[in-house]
Amino acid sequence: MSLLVAVVGNLMLVDAARRLSGSRLVAVLPAVVWLVIAIAGTMRRPEGDLLLPGGDAATQAVTLGFLLFGVVAAAFAVGRALGAEPVRQVRPARAGSGSGGAR
Image (cartoon, rainbow, N blue to C red; front, side, top):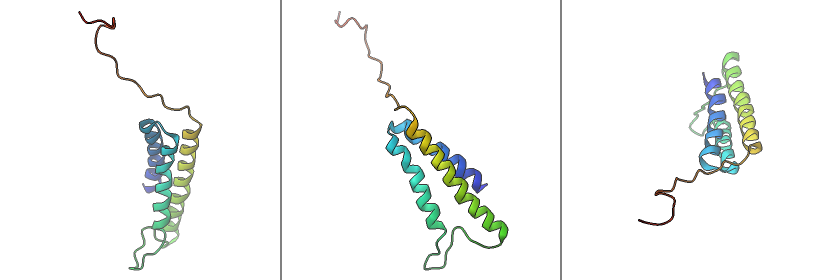
């Protein structure tokens, strides 16, 4: 499940950030934040906590897949966002008759 969330989440967050902000630079931020948090989750804290454990072979495979597929999805989404045309901001419709004069 974590693999699916990492892939779909990275694809959707990068695209949503680009569409909502209109900036390609802002679109990169969700991928960077995800990567920093995922890497930090693999490091043991002074208290001994470990978010992404090594454990047995199955756990290691899921952890490695989470990191690998998450990074690949984030890189794909960022590449797509950087290569896309800038988002055009929609201007609100003007009120009135459009004739320019009040009657």
